[in-house]
Length: 169
Image 1 (cartoon, rainbow, N blue to C red):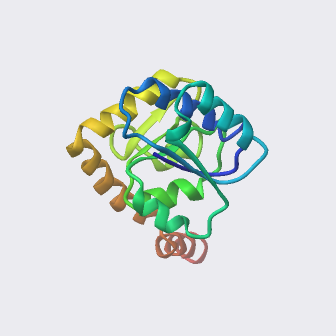
Image 2 (image 1 turned 60 degrees about the vertical axis):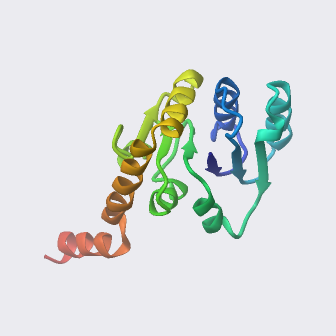
């Protein structure tokens, strides 16, 4: 499981840590690329829940594109986003997504197609969706393929074409 983003309250990493603690599947690791004032809190939470060895906070990374390639699932539990760059990068990297059902995220992710849209506070639902993606390989593959196709809608070429068509037609 991978998240990319600042370690702050809005990014809501605690929900993913709590969800992972609910899943009885020791092979799951949660990797967070980012830095911020909540790093100590998140490490303490993982320790309290008995999963400190399964949570890795990597800090700022310049090689995040390589880390996307090593991940199996992307998680973005934010309370609010614009059009998330990290979510688009995850889609372009061929990852299924479990993210909060908020503006921006639900513009990119189609529920049950490229991933799952979840209430950002619903720890149990995150855990269920993660487990489903871990267990059902074909589902994960279908979501990967869907996201790789869907992200093309947001390519710079398509956006420039739409701008040109709108303003210069």
